[in-house]
Image (cartoon, rainbow over all chains, first blue to last red; front, side, top):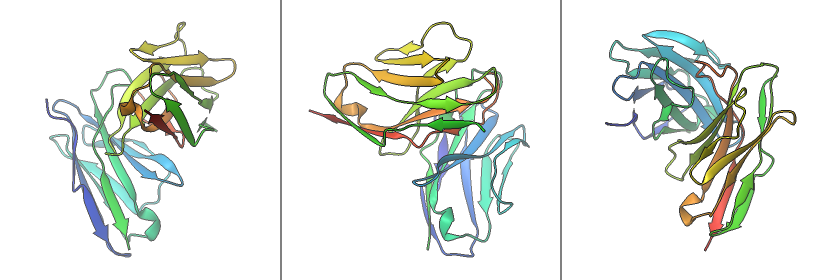
Length: 114
Length: 116
């Protein structure tokens, strides 16, 4: 069974641009969560999508948005990039009704904003 | 406020020895879950072990065990017989609801180096 895939793996953008990151969950998983990881703040929850609906949301500004498609693939978008958005963005997928520890993480997308 | 604290930024251990990584948590929820994840330099988070707040016994998974002290709000990870491949970042995390909540709150992590 293929794991969680994230594309692209690395990305360099300049301030003010926007970026879209993609996450393909494990087949059959309908829940996708996104996290931002930085050295200073650690891992912070961005949002979770289930069946194309945002189910949980963290404390990030509106520049961070996401969506989920009918095949459970998810995208997150960051508009008007700031230097502080440089981070590793991780997504995780899980089966609905599974134990809370059964979240499977992708390798992440490392975003650098210059 | 819900919070995870890992007080050890870095730890060293000799191969084949045991090591304990500290984690304390703060929550007012009666039901919660505690997790440990390993993150190698490749970046991918690897689930290690889980403890529910109502679990009576400490969780164990192979060489990993979780020393859960509810009254002290601590959930330390014990790795027995350390291996070179255990060198990685280790994160303690909490789910505010031990049920179906995917929103994890994370500590800042402990970097573990296993020396040959």
